Amino acid sequence: MTILIDNKSGAPIYDQIYSQIKNHIISGQLKENEMLPSIRKLAKDLKISFITTKRAYDELENEGFIYTIPAKGCFVAAKNIELIREENLKKIEDLLEQAVQLAAACNLSKSEIISMINFSLEDYNK
Amino acid sequence: MTILIDNKSGAPIYDQIYSQIKNHIISGQLKENEMLPSIRKLAKDLKISFITTKRAYDELENEGFIYTIPAKGCFVAAKNIELIREENLKKIEDLLEQAVQLAAACNLSKSEIISMINFSLEDYNK
DNA sequence: TCAACTGTATATAATCAACATATACAGTTT
DNA sequence: AAACTGTATATGTTGATTATATACAGTTGA
Image 1 (cartoon, chains in turn purple, yellow, brown, blue):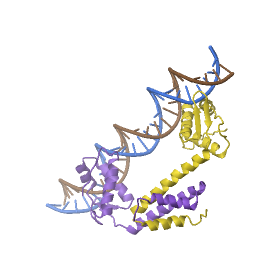
Image 2 (cartoon, each protein chain N blue to C red):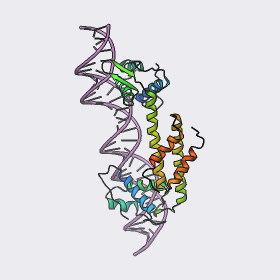
Image 3 (cartoon, chains in turn yellow, purple, red, green):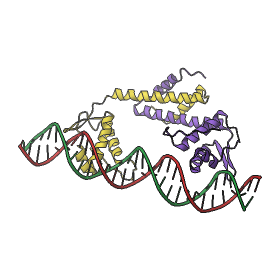
Image 4 (cartoon, protein in one colour):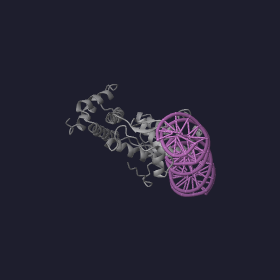
């Protein structure tokens, strides 16, 4: 597994690590229950403090992407794809609800709302 | 016109001033072309620096709620309703964009998105 | 058993943006 | 001229964010 830190990126180091590992998990490059590099080894490789790698791992754990066994290591969590999907659906419903509320506040017609969502969907062809 | 500063609120002083004046304008308590209290007078009344009241007025001007004539004063701008509408439209676009991004992240089809927005619009009959 | 590994907890330091300010300036009004 | 208007520049304070070192405690395996 390869992690690259871009010092010019502006993004915090811990965030770059978090994102890249998350992507590896989502894409399947990291399999369920596979052990991640230890926070110390990864830190050594990247020439940064292991506190920073720990922070990245903490974020991943909080979001359910990995699980930790103290003194043993960190492992890729079983992906509940359906759960993630449902979480996203709730967020989407919430966003759409807010949008509709605002639309009501400024007297947008139903068709105007529809045309706005169509505009947002323009580049989206699935 | 009355402005109240709540030190316990956590909101910045300039923001409290901004919001309250904005509300006065929207509600019609402040009429088109009416002169606002000078940044110095308001600052004196509120016992704060006039730089802070200036910042509040700057925000109001940036958003088009007031206009300024140097050495004369600040005045309520015209066409506020249209401004508010535009503000809301921007927010709506933003919300829809976020929703579409999330939808893409969990592989929702275009038609699924449309049916979700239709669901949100169910109780909305304009 | 003990050396080498794992993650944890606490305290600290550097940096940066947000917030509020004073002071000096320039134009308008009366 | 005196008293007002807004402007521009520089400064100080604070708090959140980011990254760190050091000391701690459990697990593993030669």
